[in-house]
Image (cartoon, rainbow, N blue to C red; front, side, top):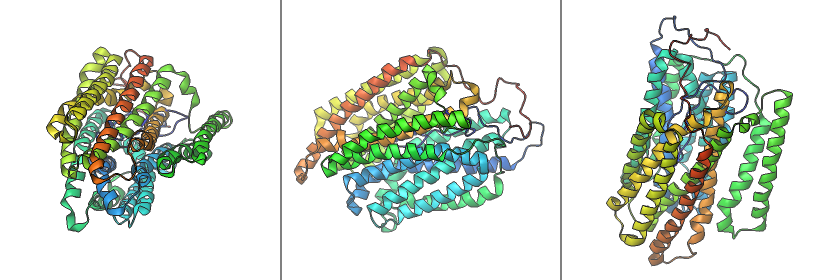
Length: 533
């Protein structure tokens, strides 16, 4: 159910990025003004009919990545039962993807700028398809975790190219329609991902159990690879910045030092080395900041443009994205375990139970952007946080009252309230964060927002050991499993409500009325020259 998603930051990186949430509903695609110039056809040039085939291909790839993120959580109990995966392995099946995706997003965008977006897209979709096959044929949890990490890394090559290819392929006057289609794709993915996962797992196609949730990517990926090579045209950024590989290494190391002990801590009895590793990660983050300052002074191409954090709304927005990712990472994995292991529901029943949530997210997201934010500004996002808290409290009350006898229908009310609240946040949040960022840093800042959200998701998944499994005793009898999981779920809801309360307070630092970010400038603005840098 969790997901993947873009934002601005350092020196120019990637034209645009696609934002996806790490939860059942995906974070809506947020087109941004490119900071790195792109080779673009002038508006006077004859329209290339192949651009619509190219659009269908990249949108299918984005949908495949989105569904793959949202589809996995619903199958986690089945994976655990068949492979005997440990608690840590379960967390890494989801957190490993998010961490690899987060660590590679900015680099993936820059590689596309330097070596060609079509080339990197094809490499990404090819690698993603191969990784999906490895996931589907994994013989044990260790191989599945490794393949999921490979999936996240290859998605980080593929996803940043999607909107960059759109920007390079379509003239400005057509992009509004295109981005609208992307929004529809995100909404469709939010609803269909968990349901598709439930159907594939419950259906046990060819006796393969949960494996078809990964193998379904093979025909789609192969078709995308073949058709993409034919219909997508190449584009590059003539003055793309250099890669900051030491920066990528430092941020990946820091995240591993923090998340690995969190995921293994409960299982290993919280050893001393785990605490030392988590403390040491703070020093690595500090070294990353110092190196980024040095990189900015020497060649102007840091991984992270630290000057952006002097913009109050951007710094606050990054804090919101990180914290929001933590809350979503915790909730959606725990929610799945609660329904399937705690309540003993089938995978199909658990999947269909989440449909009202996904629908509410999609509807509220559309209304928030089109109707509410232009009139009420920041208050819409804060209302979303309060709605999510209200939904969690209602869910908590119902869980305590009905216990193991709770029904899907009873869950629908709090889920709709939570979904509506989430929709009010995820759609306008990126625009609110970017509203005061200098235009020349829009693309790089967009990449950072996406990266931070994925890191938050990975951190939240790691914290599941603390907030959920830490509340469940060891060596439970079958009769004790249900009550233990229900009790741990209720405790987790308090944690997530606390995270959302923090988000509500931090949102006061966002602009009261964020300005709209449109693709290109005002209507009628001149198109950039064909090979503009």
